[in-house]
Image 1 (tube, rainbow, N blue to C red):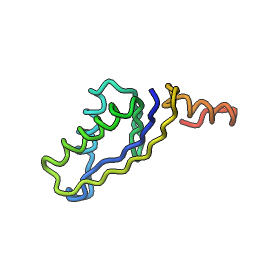
Image 2: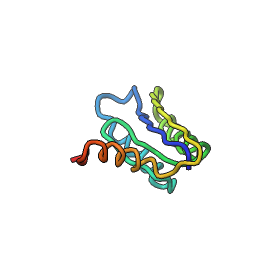
Image 3: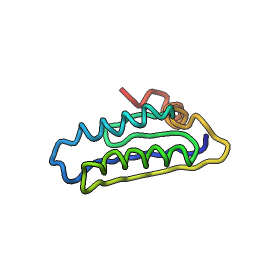
Image 4: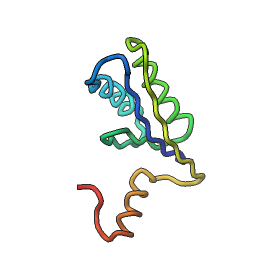
Length: 103
């Protein structure tokens, strides 16, 4: 696996609370079988390029059915021959700090 992507996808036309729509996307990511980690402002997904982008597209398709405006933010890091970056990047920072960063 060589792509680590953080995605934030939500409707802009459904008011202040969009948790139901976010949960819809997380369910799709969960069912994909790819490694992922939910954060407060986005979800990181790790896998091959086509797999990750396919999951992001599936999330978009699920939202656009009943949302007229959808915002998608994607931040991606490709590194050939690497895997386990979802947890490895955090462990690397923790090692340098000498303590855990997530409480």
